[in-house]
Length: 121
Image (cartoon, rainbow, N blue to C red):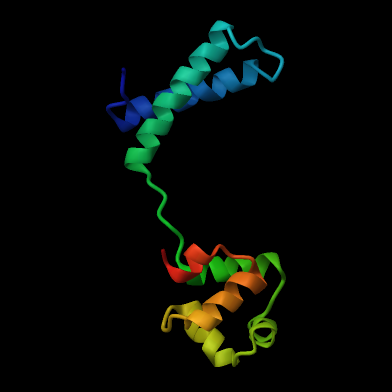
């Protein structure tokens, strides 16, 4: 199967994908040449992106900060929610300290974060 071999090829393919997205929609037949081309180019772009632009696993502090933002929580509110001091929350948010198993369980439950992310697995 073909592969994208350079950033320039990737850019050209992405531009063509954008063009195809403008001329296709949910009503375009799946066997149309535009949809077939779009699927092929999308597969090539995805393969290139996985190799050249991998997305790493987010850190626990980043996930907690995101969830705090989503839930409109301050450090103070989060500390109250978890029954911890604000300084302990600060330690978790800066990555200075890892939560104990008991605290990790509370973070997972209260913030609805997957246990594997909280435990780093």
